[in-house]
Amino acid sequence: MSTEQKIERFVLRNSKNGYFTKVSTISFKFEISQNTAWDLVGELLASGALESIHDEITGEMKLCEAGKTYHIMDLEKKRSREKFLKNRKKNQSKK
Image (cartoon, rainbow, N blue to C red):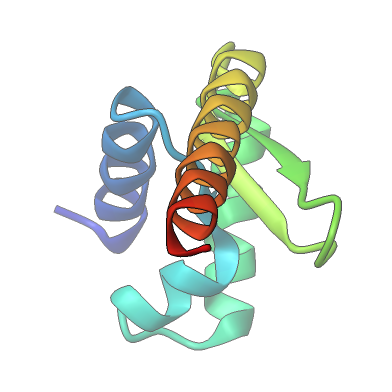
């Protein structure tokens, strides 16, 4: 299996689990250079298998399965809200 196929499977698996994949994670996980990672991501985006967005805070490119962008964004928002409420509840119980 080629590195491109491994990367595509990794991104698709993360998407099915409700998470984006950052491009920086790809170079780290697959032990390839940033340039190679960007080349492979460009090919996957051009093929239409993946979609990308940019993180609002860091500006980093995040990848997901085509058609799942808004679904995963909604899941991220829900997880963030749950984390906030959990921390808030924990802080209130300490007082």
